[in-house]
Length: 297
Ligand SMILES: Nc1ncnc2c1ncn2[C@@H]1O[C@H](COP(=O)(O)OP(=O)(O)OP(=O)(O)O)[C@@H](O)[C@H]1O
Image (tube, rainbow, N blue to C red; front, top):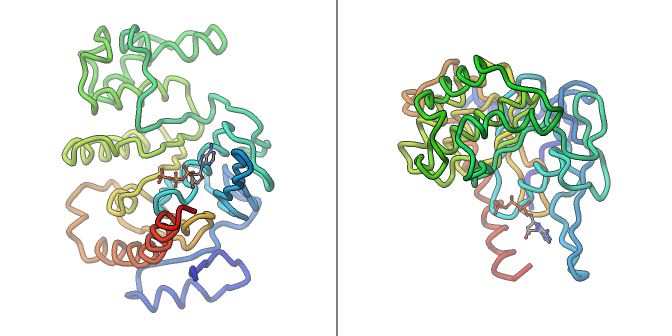
């Protein structure tokens, strides 16, 4: 059975876990005190009921994300990561429980919660510049300053491509354009669902470093979903590891690696200890997820 550690009645859990796994790898289940944080997911359950099939994707999940925090969510296939993200985005209505962002119940999508998926949502018939300007124009007929458009394209390394069309760019460049487009909407929180998983390893590394620079520069809150353990640790302030479906918090790893980070950190002992711990947490759940898939559950 899963080692769910999100019980806030276990005050000594952090010390015990931490000591048991190398001393300085901090694993906690209970994250922030309820009431704190930009995002407050409380007791979230989402059941899909296609043709009476009754699939509980997420069950009684609690998660708080602080302002300007970078949280990554790691979990086996089908454990409910996207469901969680879509409930926070306001695309899905919880079956029970609540999602509160910045003190208000989430009931529908809002530009303050920007979403990036693996497949970008750029309009192929618009130039990159037009794509970046588009959101605020349709939202409230406002215009993004040309200076801001140029700043965003500069931050994402696309300053030469304002007049190019998406199909003239590589996959990595399209995801950078997507990031610029998202930031033009001035979101408070960026919800990212495996945005780099379709990219080759080298491009992915560069994208991760660029995202951290942007996050640092722009002071946004990020929730980033991934299957990739190294990516989860490299980016995060905290890694939330989910159980197999129905998804719950299995454990939370506080990543205390110095920032700014670059890829040299991956070769450090400290990174390896975080990685071992994350793999340990996820391994059992990946097996359970595979059993569920084998049994067609
Ligand atoms: N619209 C839907 N109708 C029925 N079941 C669904 C629906 N969307 C998701 N599910 C099921 O809910 C469970 C969780 O799906 P979800 O996509 O949230 O998981 P995930 O962790 O993001 O998966 P992956 O890692 O494969 O992207 C899965 O079993 C999935 O098949």
